[in-house]
Image (cartoon, rainbow, N blue to C red):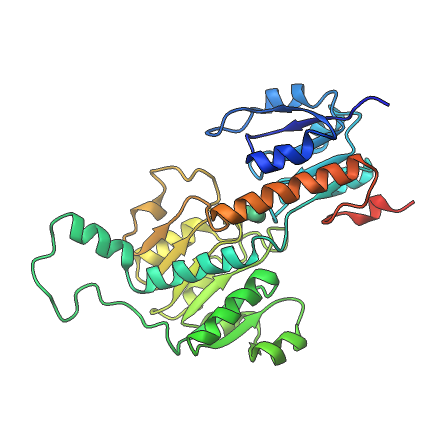
Length: 327
Ligand code: GLV
């Protein structure tokens, strides 16, 4: 039998390529700064058995139809909203993702954004560099306390739970909303379930940890920001379209909330003239919540392991549509 062929949509860390090389012949999109264009993607997949994709690649029915031999799409991300899962399942293509390995790194970053936004760290950095710092002042760049504040988590999956664990070290009261109530975690983490609007109204810090789906698109918009405390700090490390970005920019401009820390955007890269970027009380980051060196290497190797497992006829560690593997 001939060796399987694979297309990898970005240059990956070497350990990941070392996992693929003994099993398959692969072509690599060899640029780091841009993803392959749609045209290139459609051309490159025509003969492949496997595709290793990034969240910047839209993998839909058209791509799958252009790749009649395709058996696996291995996404280098925990989120897989860039892939049409029903279309893959219908064509018996296995889709995999990279959960677990990034949980703690993303939770660290959500915490980092909460602290930095509450304590105005980026404003302070700019202030000092711009030569504006003349003297110590009683209320210079005064922010909000995180210690013993109330944290509201929207979504209590792996990452939400990891943020809750960190919050306990800050003696925070933690409440969460999730469509799936987790009484086991309420006990073990000492956290409280609250209806969605109660979390928005009562929390000092709100951090979003839900996947993007038709149910969560614009889950947080104008009405939701208007329910939050004027002292609230809002953080999003999930997916941009979960939040109505225009409504967020307006809430920050009108000081309806205190500050925000945002890692994900409705359009990425976020256009530099986006109103959100004009708000001094917003900290923005270029979708880097999972970007520690060890975690990105683990994500790449896990994506390679998932890919190779399916190509070898084995069960991959992280199938998203496991029903394809049956029978
Ligand atoms: C990154 O955003 C991921 O989904 O892993």
